[in-house]
View 1: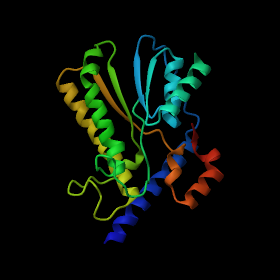
View 2: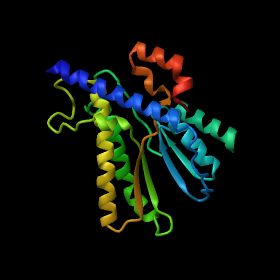
View 3: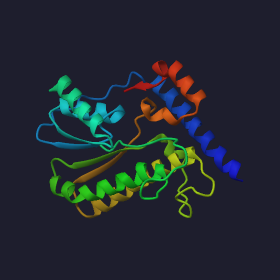
Length: 233
């Protein structure tokens, strides 16, 4: 039974990944509308020192927004600020497929970093977001999730996935938790008459350092084909 619990998330995750990559190949002509100037607005970007987070922070700063970068490495954060200022003068931190481990607070690493960290930060800033939103300009909470959430199962009896650990299952569960929280929070904010919108975004399959814990065959395939099939950050 444990072997099946391990293999199913792996198969589901890679099936979804292949599906997303094919969609990216066939819909490359899709172009997002230009972002208008964002002068006077503030963005708090977690994981903003590299990868998707860095390019998000850079793009927002380019459009006049005051960007606050949060991360777990001060040197990387300072370097990101230097690069953004030199080139141009949202919640994206996360991990994927890490070996079984716990955070300093004792939570399974995927669930702790990918979900509980975002949950805590969002709630700490929620009063400020409520006060900042107006009927003309809503405050926004944008969380990076993943299509992998479709493969996730929220096991309330074993959120730590301690019975039979699967890094693929743990990752999918953390992303599912993010999506469910996004829906729940939006329902609560709407019911309370707050001018705050919550969004869960799937960026697709992007060529970033997030894949550092993928098995070596996966990393090899990514290094050989990533430039062709994956989005580049």
